[in-house]
Amino acid sequence: MTGQEIRARLKAVGKTQNDLAALLGKDRSTVARLLNGRTRLLVDVSAQIEAYLAPLEARAGAAGGVRETATPFAPAPSPFASPPARPRRKKLSPEEIDALVREIGELAAVLRNAPRLTEMTDDELLGYDAPR
Image: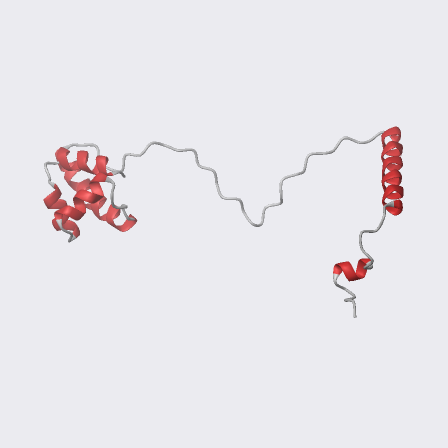
């Protein structure tokens, strides 16, 4: 429920911001900020306003209730549901597998022949065996 909707409903039943302020136990300026959208409408305040306006609208013959547009509802994912199936990958042909194995072998040979940038061992680089 927005401030504009509340204002229209108040007008339809012949009530003022002062009437609403008295109901909520707030001053008129607080209600004005609420209706202008400068103050957030809390759920409990919204329920109080609805409980106040609904019977008045019923007596006045106006359509009561919260007027909201329908939005599509998507339920939250259940933590117990199985994960969605992953899409299947295309199977590689034997020729494609051979080409990949050759490329990986070539990369390994290049790395074996690459010059070392430091005299530290792999364990020292990873912090497993600190130099003394």
